Length: 377
Image (cartoon, rainbow, N blue to C red):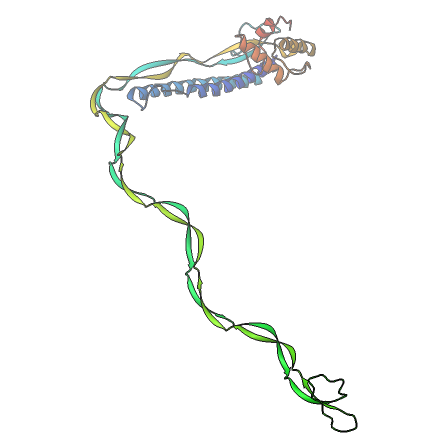
């Protein structure tokens, strides 16, 4: 029984230490809402909060000393002290749990800035419009009308007419004529007189009988061909006519001219920014601005109470299996059912108790959890 009491006191001390750390972290998180700078009201609220925290820490230190004294007394004596659970029954186990102080958040309204006035410059208002503006004025310019050409055929003189002296050679011809070869003559010819003609003068020269006749021999002619001049050589003036050639050439049909052309004025549409409403000054009343300061106010002091828990001697392996299965049916125990009280079982029981508004602890199982699960442990 003494050993169980020591275990319970140790568990309570561990629970108090954990609860104290968590409480300090939450209590020290004082928030100022809707303020830009620290005012006197905020400073006073912070000072009050510091005083409360110091008082709470002092109370906890005192309680921890009492727990240490209880542990020392229990270790040296078998007789329970006054710090043990009241009205305890045989077979019941309890855990000493420190209930942290409870707080509430209170908001105070403070004046953040006094009423005043300010001047606001309302800027000038402009709008963009389209305008047609003159870019180039009307003017005149001279425009050249190019000449017009056509292709014509023309007979052009290549070589002028001229004269030349041509030599006409002499003309010859061949003529055939009878020319005297031998003129007619007389000759003495020997022969009988009977053979001579009557015109032959016979003369007996001797008695030998020879007759010498003076014979007239007629003239003989022969035919000759000779080249005779028909027309003597001469000269002649010959006219050489002019030479012409037909050529194609490009001639001006209409000469180039100029004319005056009127160039119209050029306009463009541009976007122009025009002042619609000039800038003005407006007086604005600034109302009082209030801010809200949040502060934590203690509702109840920290306290210590005894909670009935499931005794370790009752957590036999079959009973732990029943507990694990019951928590698994509720969706809290999600590991293997092994009948051993470990971190997984304690965590599942604690989460189940917290979700169902029951007392909960990280290292014990409250009786309320077992009763809620209809278990006989």
